[in-house]
Length: 411
Figure 1 (tube, one colour):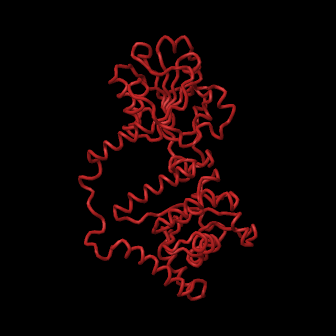
Figure 2 (cartoon, one colour):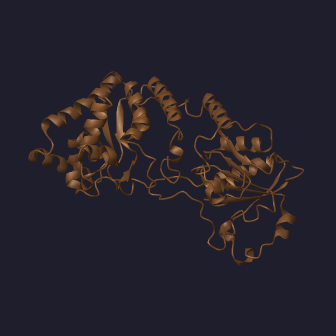
Figure 3 (spheres, one colour):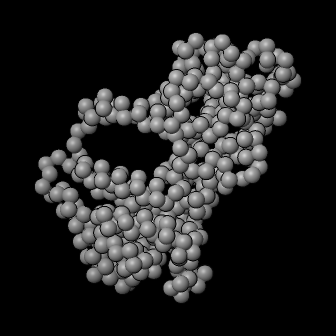
């Protein structure tokens, strides 16, 4: 829901709740066939805040009604489909907590909120399976509560399993002490154990001789390779090409200026992109911004035109934990690695990760989202740039970042 969120981004099925539900149900169906236990996460729902709960508590700021129509509908349906577990995020849901009389200063992340785990998840949504916390070493877990209280409070609030410890022996001691003090009851502890064992029993783990089957001959098999190729072909999305630069040809665009963004010039995926184009007969010169200095400051349009027929910018800005934003960060020396000359030389921008980069290069006329930085995606992009394959992808999110009029100006 928030294009600025640095965590959800490519870790979601998109911004349309119906699409998310359809894809999630299909994923669960396939995973069930494999004999595994699906966990639906991160309750009560990430992607509204623009921050990262690895660093502090984040907030789902929807109203209760809005939440029920979106996140709630998805959780409820997957629960009714038989999801075994729910992972609870270090994400608060203020509107619901307030509706239960919780004052703002006492609103906590779902991990530590009995009203979210018991009233909402258990009672209203009908979940009767196992609840697990998200990783407790994340800063968002209990920053307003001493850890000696946070660990037992998670269990007392309704979590059945603790995911990851900071110090195992210490966390265990915190839990033992809380049992002595009555903060966590024996009944709650037994209920948690019963739910954990129930999930294991439902999977028949107690009957299996081999808990983790061998993947030899499975991962990377021809069937999976073909599936990856097909997915790449169907997913790569042409966001816009308003100057009709595509398709590129060896006659018109033989000499290519390739600028990597977010990764060094020798990154494997950049080199693969270069080699793929060279195999098609193009001459590709990868720019290494690490070597750029004052000698590039007076780079002239005439020199660029004399040496290149096409500029190709390839962004690989990957999301990861503890990263507060996923934006294009150009060279601080007058942004010499940016497409500043896009109106003088035909320019194509390709993102192999974050699909929201158009906000930072709104003046680029041709923009492609690949979503994944793997070789199958690069192969598909090259074929589509050359016109050998049609663009079939449909935007799963809004690449115009809130349908901003100023980004649409260049359409």
